[in-house]
Image 1 (cartoon, rainbow, N blue to C red):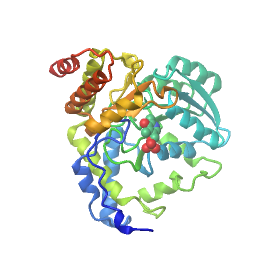
Image 2 (cartoon, protein in one colour):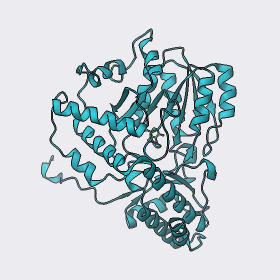
Image 3 (spheres, protein in one colour):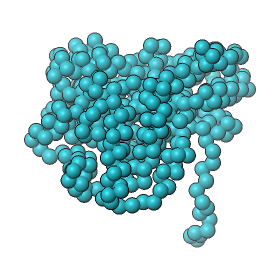
Image 4 (tube, rainbow, N blue to C red):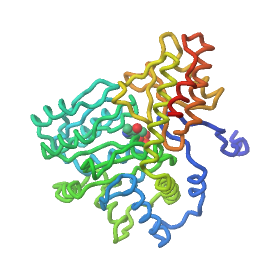
Length: 393
Ligand SMILES: *Cc1c(COP(=O)(O)O)cnc(C)c1O
């Protein structure tokens, strides 16, 4: 029998979000999202849209006119960039060093692009020298890569890869879902033609929007297409008319999500990008110092590590799921499991946005030590002291 009374109020309980996203959302952002829903063409909302665009340009570090949040999660931004810039038969070189690079390949193939896939070991950065060789032989129209591979914790060098894209006259397309707002990724400085992100990683807003930014060169490509964009919903030439002066209805903007994103971006602007990047860097170093003091090791070599996503190798004989469920049950800490070929091999510990605090570093290290110790793993005491030494430095 259907019993409407058995459905209670939503009450997920308290969590410390230290996985690959979503990250913790501040009370300010949640409160902004609870503001009254108004029309998506209401003058008050149009002003919120304009401000959101300005704040997005600040965090992307660009003055690109086309800088907007696409309706949908990070994958919608990924799809939007490819469907708008790739026509059937266009050569697209995709660098793959983890799960999200393979997702790019899947999208390119679905829309009939000629895929040139260049693989790198998972847990390592993309090597610009190898990309240069492949790109100068293949002459792609687009060179695409994931800046911050959330599946492995590896960071690829944007400046060098941007240089390669220019040498072969390709548009430079970059996934910034995890890096945006947590480390330098400047769209203008690195001459990026198409960048996309997601709200739930270092921006610390719930999932639901995908900020993107496109250069004038990318817009030229969009304008000179021979065929219309295959996706009606993600066709930026139409979406742009809603965000631009015409204010032409395309689809109803997710009004309350926009309130949340605007507030999250305001929080970032108040902290300042440099201070925010420094906070991510120091908490990352403290976490690594603690992990290594315990006798555990990181997947990614030091110079190629991301600050906001830390892949820790699971010690021999220790239950991957057992540790994650003990962290959740006993300490309310969520961390991520390994994905794809790293499933069962690593834990992914996020330090993203509002979740990236000294308190969370200390809590996680203490909790992990205690759980591993109880499971009979060989762990050395001293993790908190090692992390503390980084904070004191
Ligand atoms: C999370 C993530 C995505 C996908 O975003 P969704 O919001 O899950 O659709 C794409 N790329 C990277 C690097 C990510 O971390």
